Image (cartoon, rainbow, N blue to C red):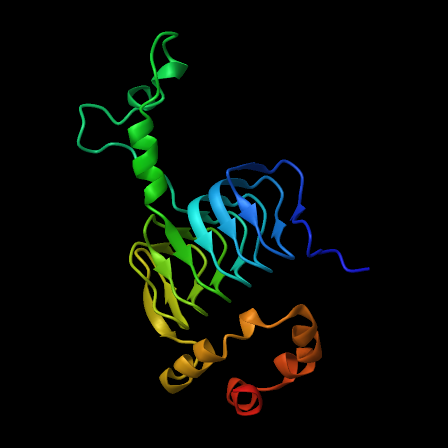
Length: 204
């Protein structure tokens, strides 16, 4: 029997999530922490991922120990410390700086459809990872990543394209990630066996 279900995410042990939503057939790995995250259909994250203020497309593959949208500390104030904005943790009569939390939440990171974020990579706030892109293990992404490109390093830089430039627009226009669950199953043999060019020739 299939493990992943349309109606509810498969959430492993020790997961913490706050103000987060999940599409169909999603999975969240053990020990992960999610805050203000929206998962598109079929997307998953592996063990101990830390995702904040992130919009994730469909069919995204997020490996273990990835961090996306790491929150900021105030660089232009006399101190960087939590006591400035988590003040109620330190004094009974102090209030949280809700404006600071609102600024953090507005700095959304975007992860496109059919992406792969490798083990222990980081994606900074407000960065967009284009559809079909790959972020190599250990990379730190500080700038937008173009569709179907592969980036690596610290800071991450382009390595090569996954597919030729003339095929990218066709893949995005095809938008197979919007296909029905049954059509995906019917096309499974072709996904497994056809090259990108052959797949587009048949379905585009």
